[in-house]
Length: 305
Image 1 (tube, rainbow, N blue to C red):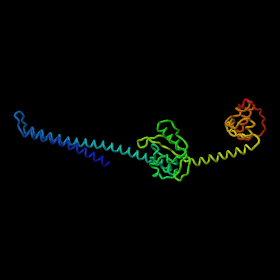
Image 2: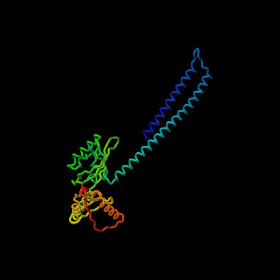
Image 3: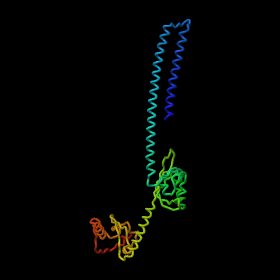
Image 4: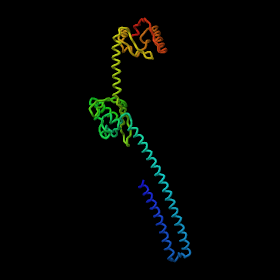
C-alpha cells in the first residue's frame, strides 16, 4: 500500500512540474518578444503588459486545473486501491474460512501433484501417524500397502491420462508404526495455487470393517443355528422377498439358497399357493402380528426352473 501511495505522489509531482515548465517557458518567450523590436512586428508596452496579465491568469487557472486533475486522479486511484484491498480481504477471509474447515475436518484430506503431497490436514497426519510438516513433499506411494501399490499407480496413470477411473475406492495403507489399516478414498481433480492437482478425502474405516466382520460372524452363527433345525425356516422383507432360508427349506423346495434369496412366493410356488402365501405375508406385515398354523403346498416343477 505504501508503494502505491508513493507512485501516486510521484505521478502528481511529475504532472505539476511538466505544466509549470511549459508555462514558465511561455512567460520567458513573451518577455523576449516584448523586449525586442522587429521591423515588421513591434509589440507595445501596453500590449505586452496585457499579454503578461492574461498569461498570469492562464497560469493560475492552469495550476488550479492541474491540481483538480491531480485530485481527480488521486481519487480514482484511491477508489481502485479500496476495491483491490476489499477484494484481497475477501479472498483472505474466504481462504481462512476454507482452511479452518480443512483443519478441523473429521476425514483426512490430501492435495497432491503426481503423487507428491502439497497439503495434508491434521486428521490425515493422525491417520498415518505422522506430523503435517513431515508429510509435506512425501509421495503417496510411501503409505500404500505393497500388495496394492501397482494397482494404485495404474489408477494414477489412468487419471493423469484423462481416462475414466473410480472416484471412490478402498485401499490398505501402512501407518508409520507399521500397522496396516483400511481406508476409503474419494478422489477428484482440482486447481490448487493455479495448477492442476488431485484432491483426496480419506476416511478411516477400521471401525466399519470391524462391525462388518462382527455382522458376518453373527450371520454365520445364525446360519449354523438355522441349518441345525430339521424343518424349513425362512425370513422375508417388506417387499415379500426371501432374505434368509435354512438348508431344510432348500431341500423342501429342491432349490439352492442362491436360487431362493431375492425372489417372491409367486416366483417359486403354484399360482393358488403363491396368492395365499402372499396375502398371508402382507397381513402379517400390515398388522404387525404373528401367524401360526399349518400350510400344505404342492410344488409345481416348472416353478423351480
